[in-house]
Amino acid sequence: MRILVVEDEKKLAGFIKKGLEEEGYALDVAHDGQEGLMLALDGVHDLIILDINLPKMDGLSLLKEFRRQKGKTPVLLLTVRAAIEDKVLGLDTGADDYLTKPFSFQELLARIRALLRRRADVSPPLLQVADLTLDPARRLVSRGNDRLDLSTKEFALLDYFMRNPGRVLTRTMIAEHVWDYDFDPMSNIIDVYVNYLRKKIDAGRSPKLLRTVRGAGYVLQVD
Image (cartoon, rainbow, N blue to C red; front, side, top):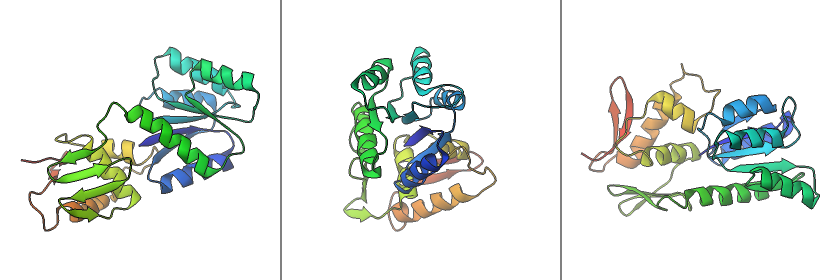
């Protein structure tokens, strides 16, 4: 899952980014409303965390323009305003939920999970390719009768493959969905993690599911 954080307080933005990356999310960060709107309109994010008080373009103006341009991504508003009228205005402008500063990281996580569950309601709760299964809600992976222990980044990578079975995923596509915009295209980290993942899901098992497509990328499929 990929999340956009639009927050001008760099210390808070860094705290959110670090915490969510440790939970296995890919993060992008913008520090003003204009940059935030540009990134939001890319359409690659599963959730947007949006502060109301932003330079260049305030959060409500950003949200209004994003919805005007048919942006469908769920938006969680961050606000220091506690008045009911302000919260109603934010929800009426197009927000899906709000969180008042200061907040606990655990509450932020809970609200993120709730919004992502709503978005995932149209998708099957369990992902499966051959005898490999992934449960996004409980973050469990198994192959046959064996439970697989994956790191947060390995889980995010497998989740992306299993949502795109039979589709060749390029390194650029993987970088955009599992890593972030600051990813170094010259790095071999994607190949390293694909190899980690392949050892865990394919080693000693048949059929082999995670394949390399020479000159293109990788694909998860059954012959």
